[in-house]
Amino acid sequence: MDCKRRLSNLPWVAALLVMAVVVFLFVFNPKADFNGDNCYYFANATSLAEGRGYADMFGRPTNNFPPGYPILMTPLRMLTDSIVAQKILNLAFLFGGVVLLFLLLVERGFKRGLAFLVGAAVLVTPHILEFSTIMMSEASCIFFIMLALWLYVRLPRDEDALWRSKRFYLFLVVLVFTYHIRTQAVALVVAVVAAMLVERRWRASAAVGAAFLLGCLPWVVRNALLGLGQSRYVSQIDFSGFFGNVQMLLLKAVPESVIPFFDVAYDEGLSLGAAVGALLLLSLIIYGFCKIRGLGALLLVMFGVTIFIIAGLDAPSRYRYLVIILPLLTAALFVGLWSLGTIVSGRFKKEFPVWTLTLLFVPMFLQYDTITKHTIWGLYAYGRIPLPSKFYNFREAGRRVAEVDRYAIVATRKPELFYLYSGVKACYFLETEDEAKLIADLVDKGVKYVVLDQLGMDATFKYLYPCVRNHPELFTTVVTVKNPDTFLLYFNREKARAWLAAPK
Image (spheres, rainbow, N blue to C red):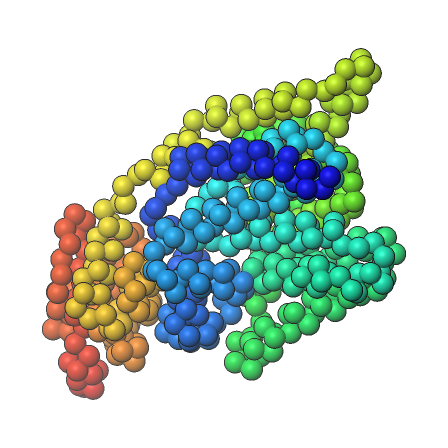
């Protein structure tokens, strides 16, 4: 019977796969994203792949980001330096998470049609796709959250049997690893412990807490031994704007992120109608969580702790940190609507047609926005925009260095992106108007080349350009890439040392 039930899931999973391939091809963007975080992840994975440990491009140990996602990138990074391959891996993680969510809902007693619509809705959610088509940790975190929940509902109820279950120990490993992908996944750990306490599974909850602390210990000890200090996220904690952030998250970020999409102006106040709509949507989501058998309390706690964590940051970044729980919020909305529809239709002795929930997809495809990445059409347009010439020229400068001097050090305002483009190590120049200090810093860092780009960074024109202009004897043009002019300059360290030593 169990085998027949699994086989009956296959057509639905196949349909999700077809949909995923179509959506991914529609929105896929092969270009590197210009944010710095994905470049850091690539550098960390490269260091691991080369056997230098968890370090930056120079081999210096770092704790800038949790190690989980770079670890997942490493096997592929050992085979290829392609960022496209890493993006495909992310999309595979997203699809895997969607399949696990589908199976989870089916096993919680929901119809396959409803579970399929939830999975389909996740696959076309712009904010999820936005972060799944770049080298960021959200997609892999979504997968491991779903895997943890999938394992959780399969744990033996009897505590004596729990200790003999291999699945329980796998669950603990997945739970800890999820935290090491994204720190905010601590909300899942808190929720699991809370749910077990509510169920009076005292030893199990203690085991989860102990396993989590033990799983975090190696990372904490490693950072302490290397003198790396606390996580950078600790420095972002600031509860001064907590209640305003909670209001923003619940009344703006959540409605804007979950199907159906709201048109939200974050910098403006909410109208009464928008506030009422947001509260209704939030109520449906909470109601939906409550209707998911065996997981309702856990998911509600996870949602609440997630909001608490994000609201306690000095820069909650609107919808940014909600992405990893968006699949669960979407599932709760669909379940909530379906449950209410079932109650209403039951009064008329009719069955609620689950496929009417496809109307939730309509607002998404009506949002024809090709300017931002906040809609399906926007992601499509963004993926097909040619690389801006200023970034193309910047990449070309990196390619030229890689051809002639692969092991040189280059100074630029975008060192992580330069490294991503070229594989050549790069560093910042000192942001100072004191030219002697700037030049001395280039010498100390062993810089051999300098990139004078037109990426629009103020520091380049305020600090680097005047220094280059005033000291042509120290900076020799090696390559000029036209329109807009981007210069690769050779920095003569010997002449720079002599200039620094000369009396002023």
